[in-house]
Amino acid sequence: MKKYLEAIANVAKSEQKITADLSVSALCHQNEELRKLIEDYHSVTSQLSEFAREISSVNQRTFQEPLKRFGGTFSNVESGFHHREQLVQEWRTLAAKVRKLEERERTASTVVKLDRDKKALDVAAKELATYHAFLLAELTQFLEKRSEYFRPSLQALVRSQLDYYGNNTRLFTHLVPATSTPEGSPSSAASDSQFEASISDKLDRIRALSIVRT
View 1: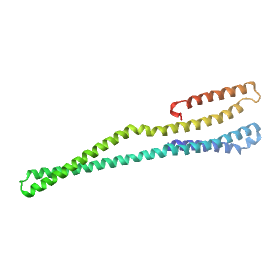
View 2 (view 1 turned 180 degrees about the vertical axis):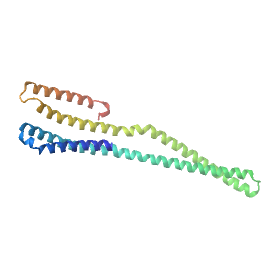
View 3 (view 1 turned 60 degrees about the vertical axis):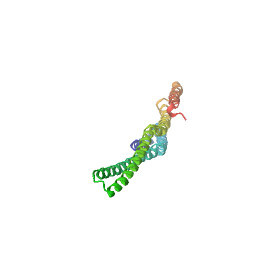
View 4 (view 1 turned 90 degrees about the horizontal axis):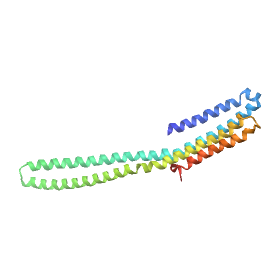
């Protein structure tokens, strides 16, 4: 996403530089039609830069930041596994002590220690079983719910791209026909309206998709 937003910003900057360089060209001042075209094009690139800043701001809030927070959950998962491993090690240590005591001669001191360590082993085993069940349930829910966490960010991404590329298309649609068709041409108005209607129809179909429905 970072590279994608950087690419959009770089394209906008490049187009603005192109039109700025063309604006100071001597050729533009010698040709009125070319000068008007470059001025209109420069106006479009200025708006494109604003759209680039907007899509960057939106995606930072709705895509990058939520996914960074989601990434933080993996450190919690790792901590959970680490704690479980500690409980396992504690249980193994107590189990080893119990086995050694059971192998010793059953003196009064040994019996007391054995009884004490067996109780501690029982507590450790129950704690391990309880935490294992908790961790298993949490991880299962985590895996099942992760798509629900991603979905709003993906929807926001699609909506921002729809607005960005739709606005780009609208700007260039108004720019290109006006300069590519001779002024006063009978087919000019018809081609403009047909093209805009086609674009509007496609955008309406995209907005109707369930993934971008509000």
